[in-house]
Length: 426
Image 1 (cartoon, helix red, strand yellow):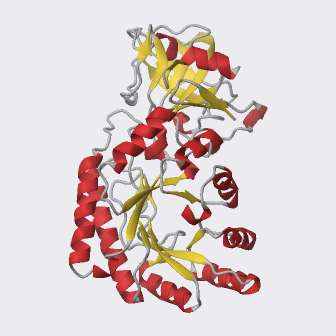
Image 2 (cartoon, helix red, strand yellow; image 1 turned 180 degrees about the horizontal axis):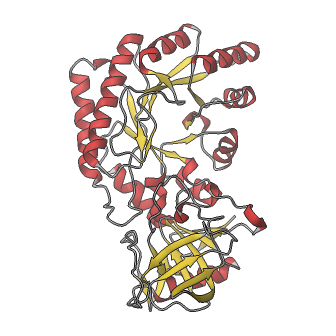
């Protein structure tokens, strides 16, 4: 009896094949796996990163910068590449700060967000001169005490918990009670207190949500964010050098998902800023703005390659057992922020674009847990031992967001495939 198959997410359209072999950065997937020395392998296409940033820069208003939220992917060669493309890095730990500095990022272009920053972390950020996004009055008090003992002037922005959220967001970061930021009705008081204490106030960080594929909702959220920044700045009585508008841009992981059309979002943002400056938000006339994006910039540029080591039958179902799994690519297994498991886009890299078999196959990892399922009953070309399975959308929240030490398996190799067809391992 033929098993019912399940749909998968859309393969990013930039990927192509040569003689049936998936190309990543102009190189065949099998050749990359050979040169990496082993699978599993995360391969990131530098040219896709270039194109992604360029496409966004082309539609944003002139006064809007692009920041990379490096939590999405902190792979060192990728960070060095991104440092040459974006205007700033947003970090969430001293470990990320160390990596950003090692990538050559100017500390003046780094901002440090996240609740629960320890005094030792604040001290390092203070010493390096990065902008610290204050998450509470208590954090501000501890930072000022450290600054008083060291004689350093802290660079600070106030992270605001807005009184709205991003509709349709996969992860809501604002609205209601949240551990992130200072509630909007107290944010101006904190900013004024920091200015009065002699801090270098760098502006606002207002992050309402992430992973939305609803362009209209993003446009509405950005307009609300600009208006809120204007109101808060008026209450402070000072113009913010920078308003970080957060992110929100989603990517199409799952069946039925459609990629965002960013052109109208950029146009609407320019109109919202212009309208604010022409009206009650004139205090923002000399302010710059920034979008803080992670997954939207890097997700589609990454492919997780894992090799089939066994094909087996059980109660009429076919299982392709691979040498990777959720310990490397947790998100594809459905165990990272999703309630209902759905299939990421997946393909057989060495038969890319070839017709699928009639019988669905489940791609499962090598771990001793039923949670280790990378694809559930999908239609693929006939799967054989030794085949390379490609899991797409692996450029964000892959290796660094997965339990790499679970069951003692080796970590996946990572590789940046550069524009000239070469590659960098680290």
